[in-house]
Length: 420
Length: 166
Image: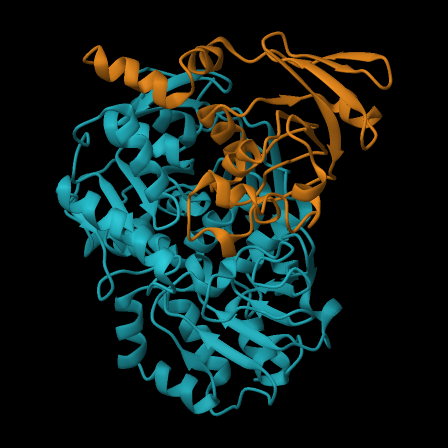
């Protein structure tokens, strides 16, 4: 019996020939990540461990992105703790304002993850890097404290569910729609504790950025990780980003899966997930007409250049509807710069949208677009829980950039084709 | 070790934003977090509960964010343990790591009513609903996890290794 890619990566990092689902292993980590919410807790725990130095200052990434630029004094104090720790331990990858970005947009862009890596981060969306054929998972602050001290962490080897998307995608359908559709099919705990492996022609045709969007939301189905077989697109994506050597591993043909789902991608419409769970996914045609107050385009899910291009294609020569606030947040400084160079920022501002510096901000109701009671937002973020973007009586509708931009123009939820 | 307290009932998919909303995450002080524990699921939870009470919840408790602030808030609020039909993965890990006792026991959840008196034997995973006169067994934790708990959580576990030069 063969192994899945997830099993192969875990086995390799545990120094074993093979592992099986359910095995408890201690594995070496290639990268440890923390942000301005989780790292301060981890730093306190790191010190409580009695550790005096980190296992490798080149293999830790500290990215203050959630409440930055610091929204208040308390947030500023949290980032100060990170800054002092980074300085004390000579952490190579500490990103301040001016070079920071939303962590899960930033790390792939910097070439910090390659196929076959094992990455842990004290942020649930750390599963994003599975798009590059890495095993990558979210853990807690205490976990990363231990990992920063020892370079290792314990894992239970997950079972893998395989999702095969046959056929080709309809216009305006991207990674966000595929993952919302998937979560809609299996529910928010449908992949609890499990690896989600994505394959099929529609996945092969998807860009690395689209795959990053999909892997990012594996956690919203309860998944431990999302993973894609690295291919020529992965190699090309990494070509200008890293000199690191890597192996292109893939799942064996006789690997064992706990379940296999096959979907016809050509049948999938742009999706919208209704409040208050990501599993409430519906084709946009079924939910059109819902009045909205705000649109957010950005986040670790959809803050990459392709996402902004898609939004600009819809907003070009159009106006955001009166009464709607449209907030666009490039994921990183280089996405921002690229958007300026391509004229996308001009398109957005002309349309009446605002463009912000990179931040997680509104996604978690932090700042830069918090909702009042009774307000509704269409957002390209990843969660629509009660109170996620602000008041507990506000509502979040999750969608991809095309639906979000089209809805901003219409003032109500609509599909892209109704606006273009 | 035994926990004795009243049941505070919650439904399925109680997410970490409901347990501790992100608007309070500009601090990691346990007492400040505890003051807002479960706020978006039940705004009166903290004022109505007594120290030692249990959270009894449905499936996928703690889904969403990796914020360790969620189990920290629950523990600091004085909740003695959480019993759920199932837990989200990161929340489960975080709870073990910070020493918040949690047990999966769908049967105990099914039959519980708000305010029922519970007694939980932590080491055996024995759960007794005193109000209903019913006893349940939670699946025992694996040896590896028991070892981490015996060392006082992950920090104690790693500290032991660091001290041993490992």
